[in-house]
Image 1 (cartoon, rainbow, N blue to C red):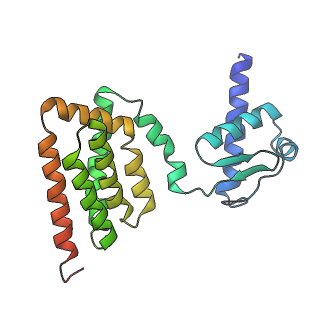
Image 2 (cartoon, rainbow, N blue to C red):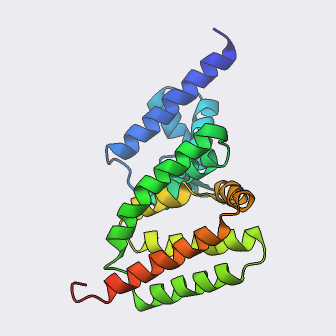
Image 3 (cartoon, rainbow, N blue to C red):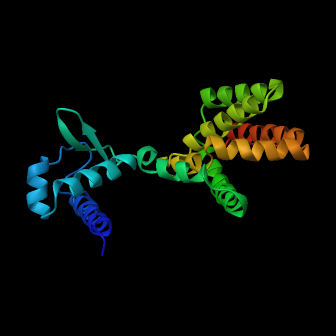
Length: 212
């Protein structure tokens, strides 16, 4: 086995051990981890492997290294932990891209259902502004920005932060740009714009019903 493979396995072990510290509750969100020397002695691993593990966990939002202070467990909020999904979604193409879009389409109706009784007057005002921006948009990027904000407002009102973050990260900027370019090529922009108005009208009607 090469030294590179050995180092990789040691880093994986360090990641697993740090994960165990957090998942067991020994260290919770916002707490500071022991210093590097203490952790290497506890894990029986090298400093280089530990450092690589900390870097990896920082990249996925689990740890935060503060210069001159130490390493902390992050808030572990969904927005942090699911950013990797958004990164991956920007790299996909072909059938995988369409499958990812399909997953988002499966999740969005449930988020919309949950959001319906929670949408406030400010939310509806925000949605109306998004529709106006879509109607007046002269560039694809303007469409994308308005569309992204429209859906962000709805899913953020769902009351489920994990669901909202997952949907948002499944619709990263690059993914939306590709889908919008596809819509433009098919001449389906007007249909898409009309569907957003329909969604808004349905939400508004339900929000004004006595059952709210």
